[in-house]
Image (cartoon, rainbow, N blue to C red; front, side, top):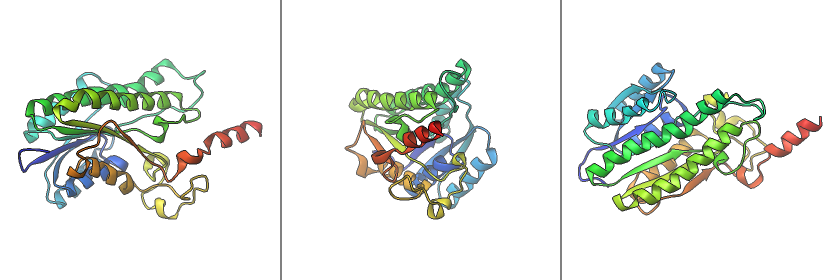
Length: 263
């Protein structure tokens, strides 16, 4: 994929959860890693220490995607610090729960700013760097199963993730001539702090509504990210890879919502 032995990846929101696991998986695959954080600097520094333990270099930057377009300049900052950029993982996300009838416009815009606007601007800057380098690259957007099916009482999140799925396909078409591959990874329920679970909960928490009966582990998402960034993924672009333990086959959330409404 590159004409140099150095490989560089940037993973947004890599201070915890899926982002941290993705950063470590890429480091294990030989990438130096740009790490960003919004509110957990200590978590980002811990990711950096673990990257160093894998023998790779890291850089840490704060990233607040509600301050666009300026915030996306961090991509150029990383490229300058490392001297190149080969992979971008757009992992930062946000949500506001509640009915669309009562959702404030500011809440709607905050979700779109982080999930969709920020991903677009970071991808745009990364693609410009990759195009100039002339050696191709990878852009991997972390969406959600709700890129494909609505999440009850989370209309802004659902709409933004659907939009990110569409952006993935459009970027894949436009960037293919430059050898830049663009794909999405769409996780189901994963044991992360945002779901009030630690990582090990993936192995001992029962989720009977999911065919595999448990939440996913962050490494099960990071493994797909690493594959898409590897030589094995060199003929894959414009795709969304759902990793959800079978959730999309049954999507029990709507039945649960109907039962709750009936009660």
